[in-house]
Image (tube, rainbow, N blue to C red; front, side):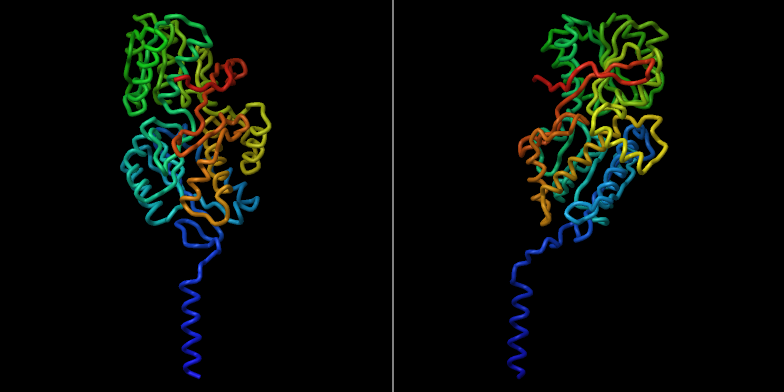
Length: 399
């Protein structure tokens, strides 16, 4: 009897330890049978909140609606949001908490290039799938296995701006002034501006640098005015924009101003009145009031959870956050029930001209390309209606 019992125990142990487990509840970081943990590292209280708070709200509303609709393969998405205040030490602390303590499966963010660069090696070492907003070529070129970004990089946006001046506006040999923020994004954009000026034969007549915290730029505008530019191309922080445009209006600088995505967001330009009448900007995502079926759906879901908040309009960074949430959830769906990190990476890399239904340009990831959408649409301001009006289709950089 004892021998039979012993034999039975041995067989049971053999089954438990050696028989393969085909269930989809294997122990994967941040994943249980009921939920998937997603970490978010975005500025919630610092200088970038005009951008990042909108994206964070979009994450909350999108995934709340997804969870209310049953989640993904029966699992709910649990967002864990950390505030890095747009400061590198806080980004590092937030990353450590989310990965070591909270054990998240994947990350949305960090929302700053400098913060990302501080944790990049840890992301690769810890094998954390990471989806960032539009950022620098340094982040995604060459492609890094666990790191993805949606939207044209700062360099590509500058290339598209020059391409638009040449191909759409048909300017020949225009005089260009460039004003940039004294930070990572400003510095890397300058290289693309130089390269684009040479390609199209444009004359770069002035370059000015602004402190990212500056709210007044009279001296810089006076220097630029002396050079008589046709266009002032900008890659500055949003707080810089108001003072700069006011100074240009007061001083009488008669030039077109062209800015990148974060300077062309709903709610930023429309309230600036006649100051914005000679502004053209590139947008990665469609504005809140864009007339399309998917934007109608976005607004309906948002107002379901936040009734009575139709105005003031959410800026285009809300759409950008929504698009990132779509990309992440679509890739999780494609991964299937038996989720693991490498299967999720492969699922992301199956997105091929994935239709974003005009919320942003279509998205493509491959093992060699982690840029995502590479499209920009150009806008002007309708001052009377206080709305952005598109003046181009989606444009990709031609070099």
